[in-house]
Image (cartoon, rainbow over all chains, first blue to last red; front, side, top):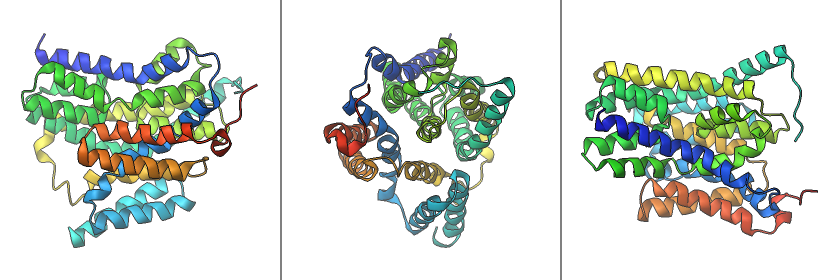
Length: 98
Length: 242
């Protein structure tokens, strides 16, 4: 087997450990402390924000326009509507401002 | 949490409801699957290896980092460690979603954790928040199309990678941030949402500038989660369990 193959296998195992590890740790406790539960409830906003925020550093007018439209549409529409609206604005704006 | 007993037909409609919700994810991730395949071959992977990595690791950003380091002939253990670092945020997802799927049989849970990606977690967590049970059929409907498209498109990208037109004009480099912003906003009714978002955004930007990628994700996430832990429980809307 090639080195590449073993890198892929080891990478896959490492990844699976991250996906099951948090559960294995938490499930050892019978009761979840309210503060831990508050922390877990904060996970989606906390992690997903970090995937967006640094992108703002390099965002130009086209990217900002797309994000603003996405935010406005998300107040009313569903996930698909806001995604398509944001993508459409991005592609359109990039034709003009690069 | 109530574990509803659902009939066969209920499972089937749950599955298709999940499939419908998977469509934006399939669209948003498609360019990255193709791009990954193309870059993988460009960095010395075979088509089969690109396919295998997508099928077994199944984590877009970590795969991109992995092949980039591979192309630079970095030591194998360092490549694996980098993949681990990029994917470390899943530990938090895992801890969070475990509460929602604890009623599944163990085999189903094992499979469920395998396909626990960013959107998979966010959409499942949103469903749990709305008071609905996160069932296996629904969860699989949400995750399976994304997985299948991801591995097939990776292979296609590896086969035909050189044919991709101007990716910038098509905006594909910015589709995921748009999608993730939509997911973040979807949680805006949660207690402490704004303080958590501000803390995570500030910490991740500072970490991005100083420590660098991919650590900014884990550092930013921990900052937001810690804020929710530190603030008194009456702010976070969580009551002590009976």
